[in-house]
Length: 427
Figure 1 (spheres, one colour):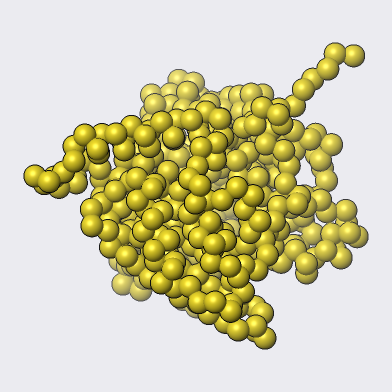
Figure 2 (cartoon, rainbow, N blue to C red):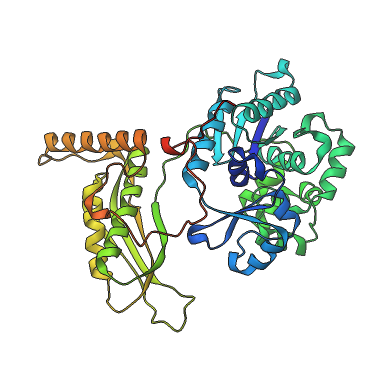
């Protein structure tokens, strides 16, 4: 029997999260801004309809925003991550096989649920998420992941599907007409660069790509494009990844809210970012064998002196201990730092990552000390998870952190901070 995969995607996720806790925003144009309130990283449908593109600098559209009443929010990643976790937990109850693909979408394998009726089952998913979390989602159901992504897009754009598009219920003529209307750039994995190359070959629509020779596409592009064509023809080439693979590199970086000159403040930022990276490292049960740090000034201020440099420091032993990683990162920073520059950004990266159980032991290992360090990091992570990130942190990270990025438009942490929880009062 052919596979039946569902792709569930939250609609305008960041904007929808903001609306859950402020229903007055429903129907109003809304954008979410990047770090330091710099660029548009999320748009409500009303903003998309105004023709505002993703990534446009906020200062360029402030006049347009005033004319159309566009409301802007700073990114509230803690809120978005928590809402995502709630959505994924609900969807996990609909199938034992789930791949969380991104913060706002996941795949489900619907094998064994045929008697439920896939379209009706998709509507049940939408209803549960809307009722229990308050977010709107659309569902695409198809024999392959590429087709599921495609029909999910159709479900969003065409109201007659009522948020659920089941490829298996479409007739051959309907599928042909639908794919003939969609530009080839709508296919999952076909970016703007590949789309331009395909158009030069006369492949303008999804139907054109579906009818192309898989072998020719492999010769012209890669094996990935060959598999894409095969997936568009209903041949499943991409398996569900129920366990996300461990990252080979972990990076943490932010732009400053104001220019930073002092080494001490740069060190605070590096320590803070490294603490976050170390937390991610432990979460995937890995160790890092090298630390990379980079610093740079603002390249857009061309009249200011410019400086940008990075350096990698191999570690004597792979580790996940925040204290050791921060110490190494600050050592690198001191080598990189040059006075007299106004720095705009620092970043850290953990590399040479291995699984914790792959570490080679030696006769000189301090087994008792390693156990104490492991328990300490576990305790720190547990407390920060229970009471909020930064509840316990290294003194090297600083207290006030005046260099932190601007977020003057951020909404409250409605679901992750007790003091920000919405309180309902009886009338």
